[in-house]
Image (cartoon, rainbow, N blue to C red; front, side, top):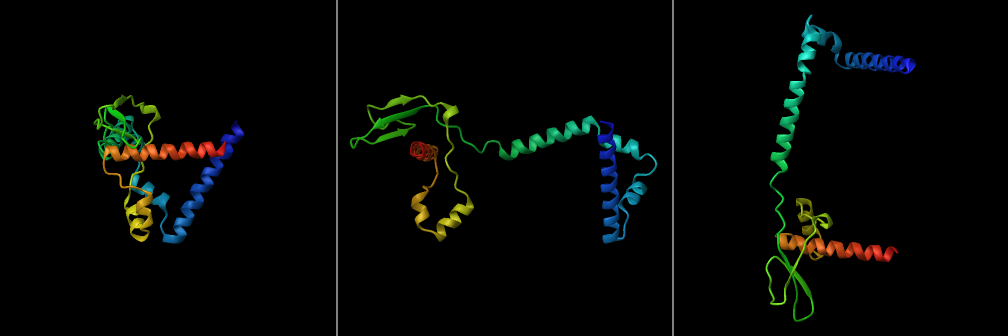
Length: 165
């Protein structure tokens, strides 16, 4: 254990020393000497103050607030009630409003949900180059379109799993 600690310290000193020398060769400045001059005689007290637990706590809270403000509120909640009905042609439909008298309410389990593919700017650029790509990936505009795209993705995944077996 003591050997491992000693070897780690030696490697660290070599890396810092060689790094300092390489910076000196490239710029003509000595970073360690310059840092010592900037910090002064109370460098250890200044270093401890800059790494206080309060500073870490404040930085962590600020990072969480930044992330939550950046990504919060963009995702719309799924409708709480989903209906399933069959039209005259025998095709099954899903929606948040019943379109038929024989529509039945369906329970949606969140743990089984699959996110629909989201169209990005790069996808739009690819569609302009390849017009056939427009028909392959439908536009995702509303929650209902997202649900349809997710259902199609699930069907494709089930078919792939059945073919693999």
